[in-house]
Amino acid sequence: MHMEELETFIVLVQEKNFTKTALKRSLSQPTVSVHIQNLEREFSTSFFKRTTKSLHVTPEGAFFYEQALKMKALYEQTKETFYQKQYQAEGHIRIGTSFTIGEYILPQVIARLRNDYPLIDFSITMGNSDSIIEAVRTFEVDIGFVEGETSSKEVVLTPFQKDQLRVVCSFAKAKPATIADLHNQTWVIREAGSGTRSSFDHLVKSNQIQLGSTIVFSSTHGIKESIKNNLGYAFLSEAAIEHELKEKKLQIVDIEGLLEERSFSYVLTKGTVLGRNLTLLLSYLEKEL
Image 1 (cartoon, one colour):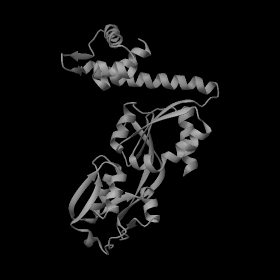
Image 2 (cartoon, rainbow, N blue to C red):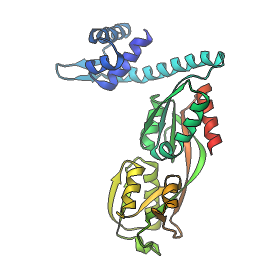
Image 3 (cartoon, rainbow, N blue to C red):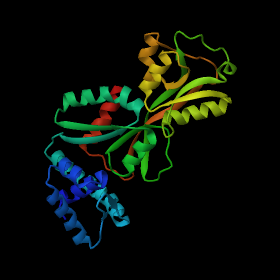
């Protein structure tokens, strides 16, 4: 088995299409077929079920995909070890991050790190906390950054910063004086699976707020723009609204009980040994805080 064959297999599982896989891997379609045939012959099983119109992963293929991700991650870690021996900081870091951390914390960290170590490259995937934890668990990213908690026993969350969430509305809107004033109002919220959404659900339940209508966005930026245009109320991280508060585009609804504290955490698979690149990333994160 060669790494090229393993990488072709991983891409084919993700794309479920030989043509797209060939383009993504810069290979010919016959070469993609040969890579898969070699793997299936080596392991004496079929990883894919082919029809004239579709391609499906077999249960054996799904199992091998999980193992292939681990093997690829181990291969990349081994390569990085040799870089470390030469005292070089170079290579590729795959980051998965929630929107709040990815939009308002990581850009400054990565900019400073890249300025000092220009040979380190990054690919950044953004999603809600649940999807990022899953990406870490399946080795699709090297490290994740999320809000909230997880029940997964295959990953470890390490808090690195406290965060507060506040109810906000447009600066042009009259601020409510009591929780009762928030009943039956429009709320602009994140989707299920988001750490911010989990905090919002807890806020509503603990304060017995009666919701009117809700509008769901998959990004914090969309929520802020909606609230700035007086669409309703939102529950957002202070890290995400600092600029809008200074510019008097948003205002905090400062009522007792309408405050939640949570942790920003980085996520690694259990047993991960930090290489040079991840150690540098976390050290620059600490400097930024």
